[in-house]
Length: 177
Length: 423
Image (tube, rainbow over all chains, first blue to last red; front, side):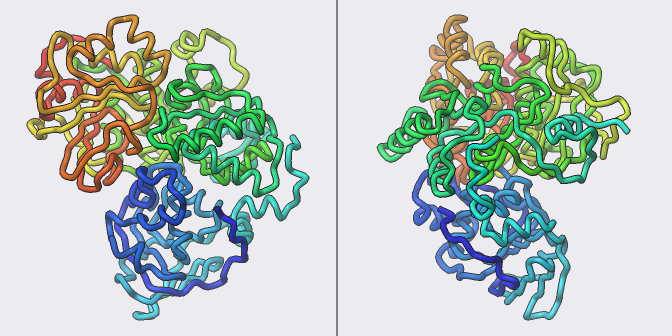
């Protein structure tokens, strides 16, 4: 898993999939498939809220959600499922701490952006500049500023995750104190 | 300026004289724990990143608790890979099938001690704050990073001080304290922040109750949740000297202060599908339930089973309701067996499960079908958590769950007439 290493795209473009507040890790990665292979797990991402999502989401699509996105478990399979489905970025009013950390750690772009729920309707074409934290609705022309990620997190995202970064920094870390 | 407990522990772990909320620090981790959902993947990640030796295998524990015992051949294979990984990486502390729930074991076995910084691959790692430990959950990739380097970045959190006074009324449990906070303050009140419990009620709050509250602090989004290390802690750990910081400075600065008077509390329940959808039990009495569950890292301790036994002693669970009981650890299982608690529960009709997480996270051992309702002492009632997305989960105290199991409907424990009911 997380085998795909690469650089962070500067801009993500796609259609918007909208979700509400408190989207939990049980909705993102149901416990019943906790140790199933990724190919199976990704078919159940958010299926209880919108069964079309795992079937029809396309690479680059953008998840727009309310507050406390990813609340609940520490399971990294929650952002991993979204990444495996090709989601380009999750833009939410706010994130749960664990989901936010995990998303950065596996290289899934996330952006806290107050006001985003009101600015988008389901299916709107959207564009996100990740480092610049700029979110645009290409239907309405509206632009919003999210909260910029600190440089250290952008560095992790650009490396494709914390482990690719560790690898890139050299194996000398291994086993040392 | 004075520091909160979160600031003091992170300052020590980052080898700094002082840190303050908002700063990013790289801190040295004192102990880490991984459970069976993530351990095999973690070993694969270590291998694919080229890490063949851990920074300190003596500071690592692995627990098989979520699928315990293995419900399928596929999971049995995962457990086998975990056991191989334990040998390959020379991990010092391994708890196999039947030992108990990871958080209970970390506390029971003395792996976490006041003043430590501890990370684990589970959100309920905030539990350790009951012993003045900065405990917080991380994901699998970050754990691989910690196992390789012994360090991780943290943002120093702001702290909310929660002042607790008074004492609990009959039929009210410590679980009701945390449900009350969730109902009042909401599921992201403490997001990215730490909680510190203080006030005149704290010395009377036993370790079991502290663990319950700190456990569910993460349901408010908390990064850490602290109780001070005091005489209760010293009695529990059978020691009186600590290496790390155990209490905040008197002039520490807080983002917010929350006041809680215990006399005002009554039995509470979180309704589906939100942990902060909290109402008094008396307002929702009568809702029929198919399953009742007593267990989990929130409320599977000896004190919880004892409360349940007081309600169920000499009585029978309602014929249309099934009651599942899972002690949180083998030690709790054995002690409740010795004290006759398990006998009372079994004779009342309970199914006693092996120590572990099973039904709470929706893995196995008692999942729900379409339209079924479960009331449990666990920590999450999110849609789809325990099986069917069309099932409903209600969260309550051991007293409320035991009372509800008796009547087959949600029942206020004060109706059942047991004088003593604290947990």
